[in-house]
Length: 101
Image 1 (cartoon, rainbow, N blue to C red):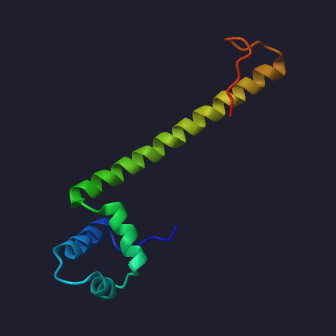
Image 2: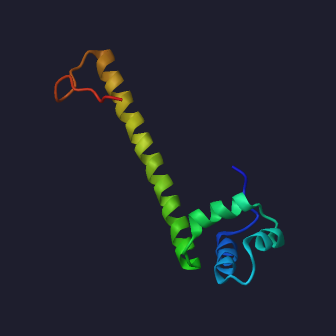
Image 3: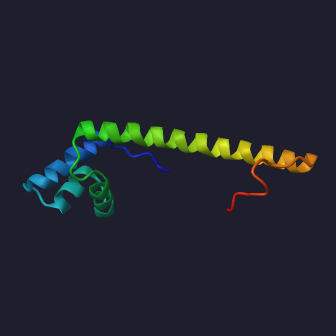
């Protein structure tokens, strides 16, 4: 994914300028060199946020990504152990229950 040339804090400031209403949205987009579509994406994601909220959002997104990786690794380990048990002919605890994907 392409890295934005604007930080989240800068995006929030641009959106706050738009909310003040001194300039039109088209003028703001021209001034900052962004398309109207980009502006709408920013507005959908960062509307109503302050800079502290954006920092917290970034922290939560990083934590969520880490937790998803940990869960995926755990699921892979469980599947590998189950495959090993099946290969060796050992019975799985809890009967023949399998995860349904």
